[in-house]
Image (cartoon, rainbow over all chains, first blue to last red; front, side, top):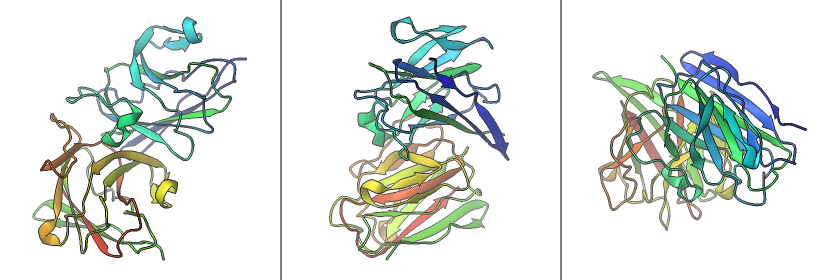
Length: 164
Length: 160
């Protein structure tokens, strides 16, 4: 049984762009990943990523990854050692462990193209403000790279961007 | 007795956006947090935060935190380990101890910028304080006490 990945749902109120999606894990695979983000996200502007899950995802650390894509066919596929991407690639691990981000606790990251300071990508440094210098790319996707089968629960991803 | 949080009051002085709020803590709380900032603040531009208290807020180090929100429902609630955020999240600790900020003369100033080229300065031993912040529609601030707070008034002022 495969992941249940919702498409990203976009809304815009005034200058505030808001896009969210959910992925429902199945309890038998190690990786939980989103579909590609929508083209309404402006990759040249900073944005904020929010993440949480309904119940604890794993009994060990759950790393969180950012993937980038270069065509409308971009998608993450596979699981564990077979994971890969169509028309895209893993950019980097953006957090070493999101296992504690259980609703209502939400983690957030400041995603900044051209970030001029060092990334903050470790839960041990969460009080210093998570931040990532992100590549300008037409599409992004996110993956929870579990070390064992992740819990069959709902994982929620949200992107918020102030646009002109 | 719960916190008494004033709404942010916006004014313009000589072309500068000024937004002010107060939070009155009681000895029943370990956290004292503001309501969400207003839409009058332009998050794409740098701004300054000024903070001061009538009396030192705690008997131990009193960290100041910044939260970011993504909707008009953004709000903090709860206390201690059960602080809950609706439609938002903790972004960062903004300062490790704001207790010296007593009276207007002791006010602390924080330079808040969405696009800094230097690392954050967020400790009492390094000034002036500065932070790279996310571009977000709403912000809120929390005094994350390690014990019951002193019953006093905390003032937050934004200048842009």
